[in-house]
Length: 471
Image (cartoon, rainbow, N blue to C red; front, side, top):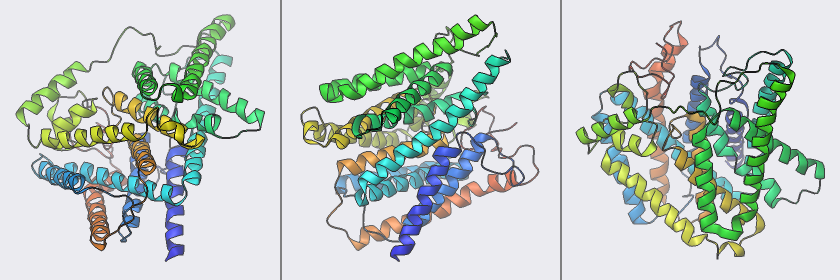
């Protein structure tokens, strides 16, 4: 049994590495097997990964963390509201896809907590290596494309040289989830190799150059708010991290100006980029948010159903580009209130335990990790208010991984475990697995056939939600 447990963990970690390291650059689903876009490839890999997580958790295990009766009842109420909202939706099957996926992602959080309790140092190092490996592949693709475009004086038009995502904003989500944790080696590890330290600095600068190239003002604003929030809460304890961030933002901007303005002008190469971070236009969010408010007024209690925003608008977008409005619109006000209350309570408990006064008692690795996780979650929560951070597959995986790591750091393993709680978690994991596979299978079978619509779900909105909608 112990050997099986070890093999299962190894398989899950290997699948996580494939998702984070390879899928942001390569389409890993053979097109001979099933025709997929990058988005659908990411989603299929996520489905397989979460299914394995659920299968692993369907075997009873001691609870990974303690939970008060009040919090447990809040989760029970949320589950009941989500199921009711799904059954009342226009397409209950599609609503069940979303709630079963989020339930499966919650089990990913539990898995991360278990791994941290077993060997926290090894887990953190492994995550850092996985993030850096994925970033390295993305940067190779980008800078090879840039060099080629410069030499041959050809325009850079998205998605080249940024590949691997259906939309450049999905790539920005990937960047924002990684930009904090990848600084950990410079902050907390004793790196005696100067070449390695310089390479990490160069890598961080190069990562920020790509971020400026992608023209995401939302990410820059979210990063700034994350840094300000971190500075307010942790003050001088966070200065090393903040200084490192500001340094690489500055060098990244200088590198961006050099690569995309100075060098093309000097060479007369005519390299063209499709946007700039200083562009004057802005994407239209107001229509989406107005529609959300109207739907909330018309469906306040149970909402319109999870993943159903796309069924209620005319070719605008499959989601409202605002996480709070999305929850209120689709899940209903009571469910959204529970989720936001849990998030707010978690933030309150975190700051109460880990603040500028208590951080000095932590180890160097732990204190830096606490600061980085706080920044990461605040920055991405901010970005989720203007983009689909809670919608996209890779972003979902990285979000629940970060939440699991934060929960593991906050709480020591529970000393008391009951057979009742273990059995409930195992049974619920099994039911979630059956629901997730059953509800998502029709589109998968459709995509496996020679059908030009591939994973089409039947709604009219443009852009991807669960699958990429191909008209």
